[in-house]
Length: 564
Image (tube, rainbow, N blue to C red; front, side):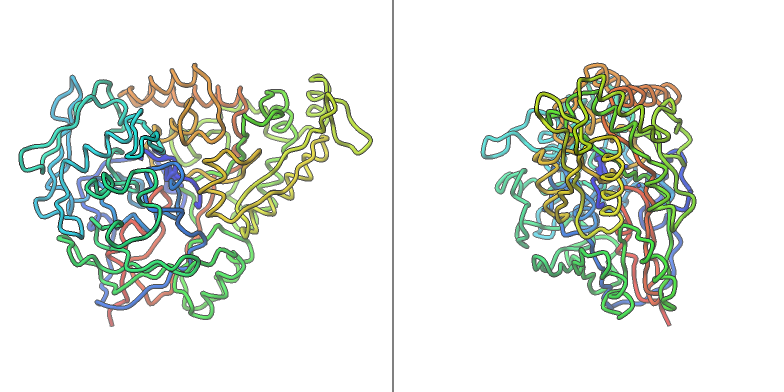
């Protein structure tokens, strides 16, 4: 989403493990089915092209890095680079049996040891086998402290899980991989899995981890999945075509074309005019209503593992002050923001009071203590005045000659988010804080501003997997995905306990304790569980929403034109 996907693979990242159905949530479940058999399939014919209106352009192609840990990259790469496990629309964890001979399993409890059997036929599109070298490389780069080929620190979206492994080894033929853990890791199925997946190590070792996959080159962005990238015209379009070296289920479509339409107001007209066949935008009230009137298009709104939030950059001199953050949270009218935006097209939308779980997960609980359920202008002003701020004639507080002002940034062209910024600006003016709107195109916002720390208050969403450990990278001290530069040794310690806890109940309690602390520190302001919106021309079958970190492209090889 975009949005970032916290990945443990977040997601956002997503999306690391970076958070995203019809309110069909629930605890993640494991299934031995393949990605081809876990959803009902309609009969389709071979051939044809589906054109997708992408609201964001990929920032690069290595979703394992913090700068490319986002939905725009996932949508392109999910069926290009392979992954051991996938998340299906029911939030079940399913093994990809095109890639794996059987489902990986724990072969030893102490030390925790996992064994993987790679399909002997599995190869990259340049003919190089997919083998243990790829697993080992991904582990080495994401376990923490790795250096890229130029000597710079490896940029990783998350070290979670990989940092708990002591060794990864391969068999003589490279098709059996054994991972031995030095610390127990409950979410081990998230490792080497979609949407981040497995990186072609033979390319990365030559081109680099951080920047080697930034630009499209067919000799570099090779495929290990059913699709490969045929072409990429920056600012215009990107085309996926079947990978002719793929050993598994081949795609039905001749191509999927990503047409980049970042202006949310132009996506529905493109669908109406048959310029595109599918949209998956940030939901907008007008768009939802207009799509319902298109007779040959099916659409749906879902709630999954994604949530919208406001992030504070702790390097900002004002936001480094906890009292200022408390005042902002106290003065933010979250119910009004929900009612003026997403609730207009889905009345189920409501404020969210947890960052680790969303409302349709059984582990969810309100960890906020009710502190910020409604705005209190007087209380917010009292906090600032108690912190030494004086209200100026212009209605803005100041201290030591410095006016209390900061930037609000989000993705330009997204009307809903732009409207949220204007609402937030007005709410902050009421408590004496000046907000200057400073939005940016999604490619710049996600690819440069967030990872570069060039923001004060940022509005975006995390889209994750069902694995709660995906959140660790977002709030851990020094993590590349910790855009806020927040650090708390207590939170770090609790995350370390939580990811190693194998008891479901104890693990849930630990994550909720973490979130209580995050509320105490006022690290971010969760706004609402974010709805997803998909619309597809009804001539196509097997296309539908997957409101997890993988998104709708998770089964793109099954898409096709309906059979006569």
